Image (cartoon, rainbow, N blue to C red; front, side):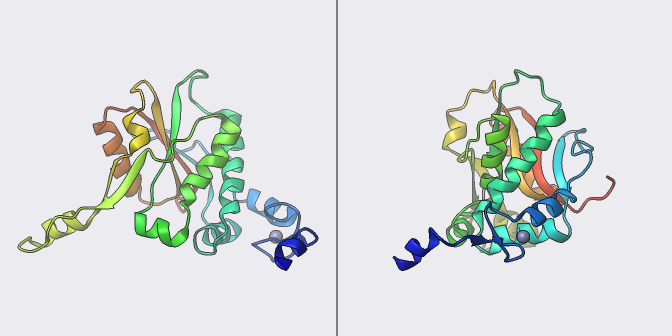
Length: 220
Ligand SMILES: [Zn+2]
């Protein structure tokens, strides 16, 4: 209780540099983070699965993502989601009246329980706040296949062990006229989002693209 009382008079420390600050991050870290933002976040907005990606997975941005995922700092998620949303608003390619909804790539329930939150959902919440695109936190769920592994060969085992996505309760009551933007924190090979995209397509939805905070891909 004393801690709660004192917190009224104490400023929090910036989770990235530990200096006292008034916002989620201190001004210096915030400015540094912006230097990792891509000049054109739509450079990969093409092909089968168009990708919007905010920044380079390096330095301070990499540090911020690690704090978000492994250090109980959920506020960093919404904060960076707002930055993504601002970049999106500047030049997004979707028609003005497009009916769209954000679906965060879900975590496996065990990981969600351990972390206490899904970082992709927090990014999506910040993004939604700025863009006005609604977010459906329970659009997809993730689970492991529970097929018995006995008697399966190696390939069959790998397939059975693979984490799979399924339509969640938000998706089940969503009109097929709404197209989906998947939200994730880091885009690497695209395997995860492709799996999620397949589930959405099989459920009869159109996928507008993927919105990611960060990628190690080079070329912009
Ligand atoms: Zn700082």
